[in-house]
Amino acid sequence: MTQRWWRESQKLCMADEAALLLDPLVERYLRELRIENGLAINTIESYRRDLAKFQRHLARHRFRMSDAVGSPLVVAFLGSLRTQPLAPASIARVLSALRGWFRFLVRERLVETSPLREVIASHRAVRLPKTLTMSEVTQLLDLPAGSMIEGRRDQAMLELMYASGLRVSELVGLAVSQIDLNAGYLRVLGKGAKERVVPMGQQARDLLAEYLAQVRPVLLNGRLSRALFVSRRAQALTRQACWKLLRLRARRAGITKAISPHMLRHSFATHLLEGGADLRAVQTMLGHSDIATTQIYTHVERSRLKQVHRRYFPR
Image (cartoon, rainbow, N blue to C red; front, top):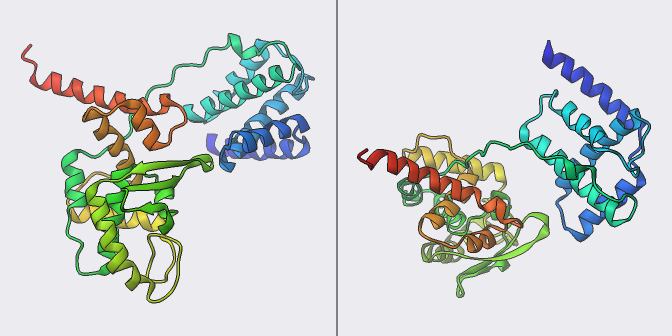
């Protein structure tokens, strides 16, 4: 009953949003975010929906988006979100959108101060990223390629993914021109069209060299492609294909836990920090704009230290 009520209320809200055009000033702000900050289109669209909800809330109280509003009105809006079946991360994103919006209004001298200065974000429970152990990574990556030529491609691809901490979208989007085997680096185009240079391990270099010389030409069969990792149809592999082959390979390696491409990225960061890597260096390799995002992996490291302490400390 609750789910049905929620779906119906969402339909009404969408109709309200369609009737209420987004303030032109908001559209200008979103354009600036897209052009100057290089935010991804999906992020911009999420902010657009969040600010449209806030605009509708203000309209009910006879305020415009550019008006100076008090903290109680903003708190009431944030409180209304908690009555909806939204994840804590979604509510945090709405708060982030509002913070940016009010900073914009202050910068444009449309309001003197942000009403959010008096609003303290509720503490969110830290969700630790799921990772593979070192032995599980070894099981996965050292698994024999098998008789199919695609197995050799998959071996090189997963080795590179772990060695460089790539997102699956970055991996399947790689072009041959982005790889420098001699220097042992690759250029990655990450979120927000931000480019970074990431090193790769010697094992990844060796497997990539073999793939480029012996495997990729067979898969292309005389056809041309810019993509680094291709199928027999000479097309770039999709994210879905990468998920599927990873799970099949994990099953063959005897790994029973649910696995995803992002777990290799999490494992890359966690294993580097466990080995003594500098947090800033890991931030650069992962392409995080904010070091707070990278710091989640220090929580993983500390949680494992606690487990070791509990297991071996005599008292």
